[in-house]
Length: 120
Image (tube, rainbow, N blue to C red; front, side, top):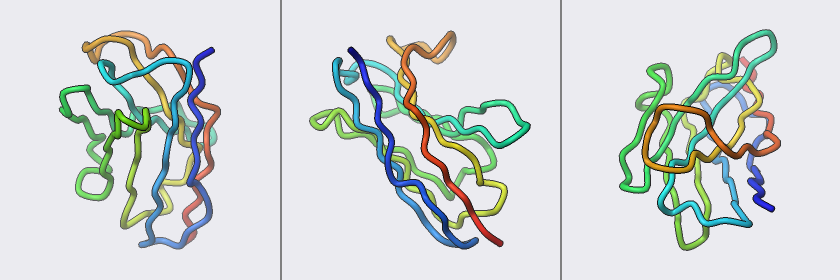
């Protein structure tokens, strides 16, 4: 059974930082794409950042320069370092994994989500 377990969410003031972690088990994802999505109440889920096995990355425009995604394949873990947080970053953040090397198509595995709340 493949599991993605997020941690590191919480309540932070605007301008603060948080580091999310996602530990995968049941399968190694060293050759696949890992990413972070978020969903705020009443809004669609959106891809925030993703990282390919070759360390190529994608960032949503609104988080460029503030968020950094990284991965430790030895630990089968992906991270999202979030800085200069804004109230608009408030959402449930989901870790996800996509088998293969194409950014197109469905994501195969999802975590249960971790809440990030940024107060103004």
